[in-house]
Amino acid sequence: MTISFFQNETVNITIPQNGTTYGGMCSKPDGTNQLNINFLDNWNLTFIFANSSTLNNSYEWQLVILNYIIDSSYFPNATNLGKHNLTLTFPNGTNAAQFNGSYRCDRTRDIPLSMGVTMTMMNLSYRAFGSDSHTDISSESELFAHVS
Image (cartoon, rainbow, N blue to C red):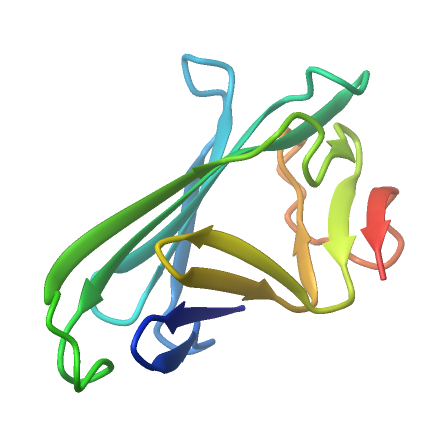
């Protein structure tokens, strides 16, 4: 996944495989599931999944939250230095998948967050609201949403 910033210049930040940690919360009090991806130095990308209001027996994206830091190491000409937060609420049915399945996107997909920031997803797979502790998402998973 790559996060691009388009303001006075374009900066592509790729979420590295090494040094990236993942966590989350299942069955939050509000009925959502949460996936946290922590990378670089104090950057965090959070996905909130909720029961689908448009599709039976499915879940969908509710929110994506990006916490990031603008500093001179990645943004040498930036004037708006410091911590920033972007929150994007998605329309009903966005990236929906069945409760017993997973979501997979094989093609490159750009998601504009706001303020000139775009998240590019490539080869993304995820599973929320699982009924067991199974963490492997293979090509044999039952897929409801498959974008290619």
